[in-house]
Length: 130
Image (cartoon, rainbow, N blue to C red; front, side):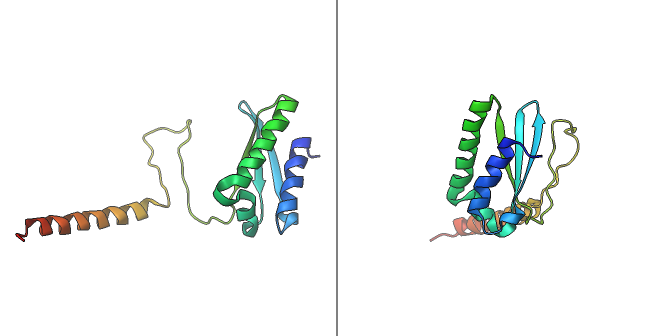
């Protein structure tokens, strides 16, 4: 049985997306409040987020209004289930000695190599007497 907040988000999102049957709203209560996790079809993710996140921010504003009425604090998390990259993060429970792996680390290494080469080329040009 879904609660009023789940039904509320589900109703709004289903009216926005092209695949309403793929809309899933999960609810989790913790010490910070109520976390609603929204999962949609990957094709509809852009519609739910909107340009510059305006639609997602509007959903969060409506949830805040509902929370005022129900004396609850709501958070909305939109899940990108189309993302195939690996993401590892450290939570507050993990130790700081463990390495953090992120899918963008290789891109950072490539960018730093590019920056290093560019600096070397600029240094060589700086040595020329023109």
